[in-house]
Image 1 (tube, rainbow, N blue to C red):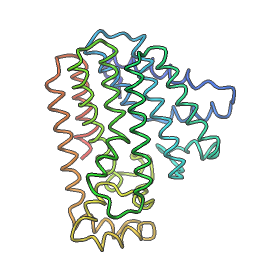
Image 2 (cartoon, rainbow, N blue to C red; image 1 turned 30 degrees about the vertical axis):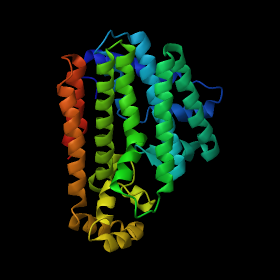
Image 3 (cartoon, rainbow, N blue to C red; image 1 turned 180 degrees about the vertical axis):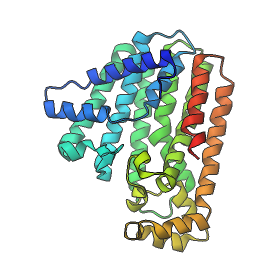
Image 4 (cartoon, rainbow, N blue to C red; image 1 turned 90 degrees about the horizontal axis):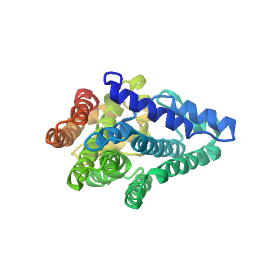
Length: 317
């Protein structure tokens, strides 16, 4: 994905090296599982945004690359913990870490990654940066707890969902752009603006991902379709159906998701225009992101950010 730009490719290669170097542990089995997980794909959007945020100021690869790697490692840790909670067997088409190591060791492996991430950050961050990353991490945990508490709750509101993904996904996108710009010495107003941009991209990214859970190709999505609905995690399309005149039909269809392979659920989503309404919300966040990006100072970072918004979000529909 990053091969079209020589600067970004070079920096992202350095991020990959830093990530793999951080996975060293005396336990060979754990190290091998984590390396496989790190190599299993993923768009690496968060470290890319950290690097791109840095291009708006005095870019220094020696300090920004480790921070970019640390933020991706935090993301990796949350994915390992998510998969344990969801008892997911696949991630990006490959076996999850707990499927290979067992749940107990996988929990410790996720914790190990978090410590590695904060060790990286500690070498290059000031107190303000540490506070911001800790705050974002706490928001992510808060949102994961909220998601767990809201399982199988058919009364969850759209507002609650948006708040949930604001922490679960958008917070790390926002902090990534913010940290790159902050470390590069950008003016505070620009740093904050880039943080808002990242949040809007993250919101759109999660909503698009949730729509693709119903409309995507399983091989491309990298996980079984309809898994969230079957596990009681009601995302935006399902919530729109639940809060429509088709509520009773939606509840019945959700309860038979696995049995009917989602056949009735698809019918309810179609009748309630839930997918269409979800796309409208995603497009609002995409529009906000594009507007902010278009108002940024001219730079290689601005151009690539706008490209990412187009390729990763707008073209998904």
